[in-house]
Amino acid sequence: MQYKNGKIDGEYSSYYRNKNIKFRVEYKNDVLWNVYEYNDEEGNELDFGSFKDGNGHIIKYDSDGVIEEEGEVKNGLREGVWKYYIKGRFFYERE
Image (cartoon, rainbow, N blue to C red; front, side, top):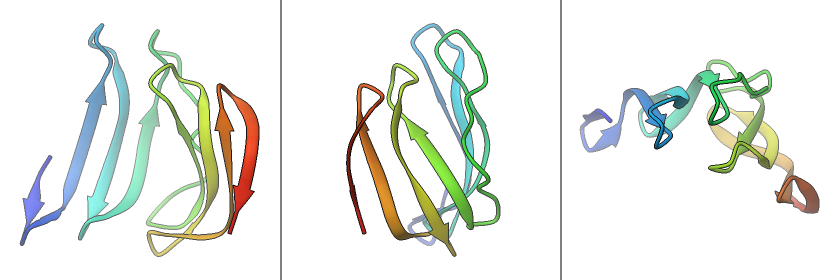
């Protein structure tokens, strides 16, 4: 993870224990800006939504590759209603 003036800035990748890539993202000025890939533990691509340049719909997954939360982002910040899941099943939503 790279920092610039004390804030996350640049590409960041996370890996599973089996060394497969979990996700590869980009931060700008401490804000999630782009998602380039999101995979399950076997390396299968997961749908991360339509998130690009700090805007759009994003889907996040837990360490098992199961949906955990989803919602809209504008200029890198959460906006509107977000849905939360437990073990892939809808749990609640909040604004």
